[in-house]
Image (cartoon, rainbow, N blue to C red; front, side, top):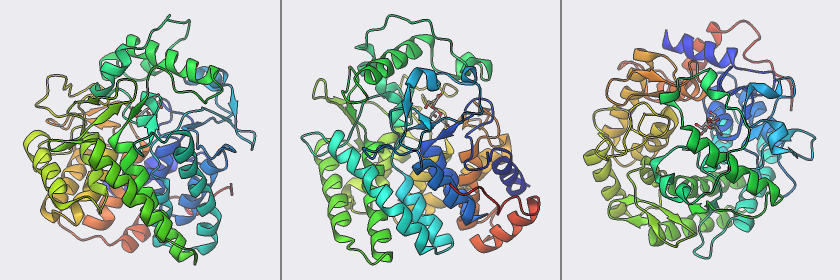
Length: 439
Ligand code: 2M8
């Protein structure tokens, strides 16, 4: 049943060349959503997964950046704020896009899609685009400490994290006449406040007005983003080797970013963000601080300490990873990114636990499945009650659950990826899953 529902969500949210995160709340293509969606679709239709990634990279800018939103011209401007009229940006392909980025989890996705169905032509096509994406971050966003910075909370993917409260408080706003659209679809207590939106809008306006070049009042190094960047280099090493190219520079870059993160962002059992405006760590209890577990080169004692923090403060053994530690005063179980559990964040930490603590990885997998069995493919979940919040029929929740089931099985029954694909294929309308419009 959950497999059938997951496939239905992915089919319903498919727009011919990409998958929308959610039909009403997010009606365009989002960058890191597409990567997670491709990881799930790799089990159903590797062809569709390849198209998802290639359509996103079709809107890559000439400086290598992959915009966080690619707008669908068929969707009215008023359906989402901020829309194309706000961003005023176009890719060389002519697509209207935003001008900021999101965590680079795409190389990881491309490699997994290739593993599901080897396709060297796809790998050779996407490899230079993935390299250019990293190159943009290395050139435009590298700090003197060798870390990658972000210039907007939206770039972190964990937009409303309490970790951003302090840096955001320095952002001056003169509330402009914009109209939020998110509150039409989701109740206000599950979304950021108007004050947060004023600041998001002010920051995005300033970055846009600098020609998408100059960091403004918000400029931070985030552990999730840097860990994704390092994991991307490791995936690029695999891709390069498969294409007959030299993987070593990618391995060296992954080692360098891991070392820089340990030196500058690690603090007492968790990785923290660092505010480049003040030079200080932003000490918080964000689950972003556990995501560096996806880096296999993390020193053993640090991985061990992160797991200890996960057990003591994030209930790692008993539930789905909360986005912010329930033991912290800012924790809110229902408000977007301030405490609820998200499947993508849990999936990332699950990846990092598989080779280190298979027992904890197994309980996280079971609990991700329990959450969607209890509440459906919601955008986020109360970590304690597993009640669903945010939008319904949310694509990455469906996609990543397919990946979890493919690897972990369902309710104790093994479900190898291949069988899942066949099973899921039989749920779809004939021809619908495999067919696509080439990018
Ligand atoms: C959320 O972010 C967008 C802005 O990018 C929004 O709230 O309108 C975040 O959860 C982000 O991580 C995600 O990629 C996006 C689409 O699912 O929604």
